[in-house]
Image (cartoon, rainbow, N blue to C red; front, side, top):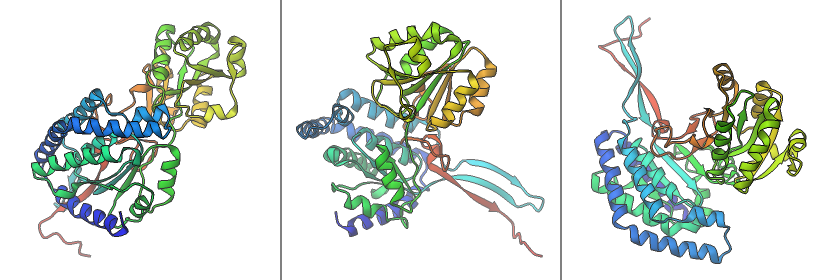
Length: 418
C-alpha cells in the first residue's frame, strides 16, 4: 500500500467518524447485530483461510504459542460473535450527561459524553482482536482503522470485510471500519504520521511493538506494557482458598497478561503453606523460582535472580517470595509491579482495604483470582485491551473508555459583559 492510500484511509475515517458520532444507539446496535450475522454467513470461508495461514506459520517455524494465538476454531468463532452481541446489549456510552448545573445568571451548563473520533488498532497474531476492536469502536461511535499482523492478514481481511458489509447494511457510513491490507512496516510507519486524522492509537502485542509505536508517533497512545501480576497471601488467609486462588491465577491460562507471575507469602504461614502450594503447582507443571527464605522451605526449587521479580513470564514459571508483612508485600508490588493486576488473600477487611488503597495498580483483587481482571468479568462486554497507563484510561478498555466529553452551555442571549 502506498503512502497516498494510507492517507486516503485516514481521511475517509475522519469523515466517517463525524457522521458516526451523531448516530443513535439503536442504529449502532443494529450494525453490531448485522456484523455478527454477516460473519456467521462466511464462517466456513474464514475457517478455511485461517487454517491455511496456520499451516504457513507452522512451515515457517512459528512457536506453539504463536500458533495458538493465531488459530480460529468453531469455539473461538462463537466467542467472537458473542462479544459483538454482548457489546450491543450494553448501555449507550454516548450522549450521556455526566454533570451539569444552571448558574446564577440562568446559563445551563453540562458535560456530555462524545466519541474520541478515529482509533487506530495495531496488533499481532490474534484475529479475535479484529472483531473485538471493531465492536467496541462502533458501540462507542468511533471509526476504526485496523492493522493486524501479516501472519493473519487474509483472516483479518475476511473478518473486516464481513463486518463492513454488516455495518453498511445497517446504514452506517462505509468507512467506519477499515483495514490496512498490505504486510510490512512501511504502511504502519505512514499510519503513525497521521496525527491530523487519527485521534488515538492502541497497540496490542508484545512490549517491543508497544514501545515502537509509542516512540514513533505524535498520536496519543493507550499502552499496555507488562503484566507483572502479584498475589499476596496474608498471614490470616484461609489456606484452601489461598491455594485455589493461586492455582487459578497462574494456571488457568499462563500466556495472558493477567496471569500470576509473582507469589508473595507472609512469613507467618510460609512453612505451613508453601509445601502445599509447591505440590499443587508441581501437579500443574509450574516451575518455581524462590527467594532464599523460600528455598529453605523448598530446597529443590531454583533460586530467583533479581530479574525474575521484574519478569512477565507468560510461561509455566512462577517467582515466589516470603515477605515480612502486608507493608512489605505492598512495597514489593509497587517496586516491581507493572500496574496491571495485583491481588490479596485475607480474612481481614482492614488488611484488604489497606492493600487496595496503597497498591498502585489498574486492578486490585480481594480474595479473587487475577484472571478475573478483564472486560468480561467486569461487565464491559468486549474490550480492546487493558491499559497500564493512567491517562486517558486505566484498566480494561471498553466502550465507555473510548469516549471523551464536551461542555455545552444553553443560554438566552447571555453575555459576559464587564
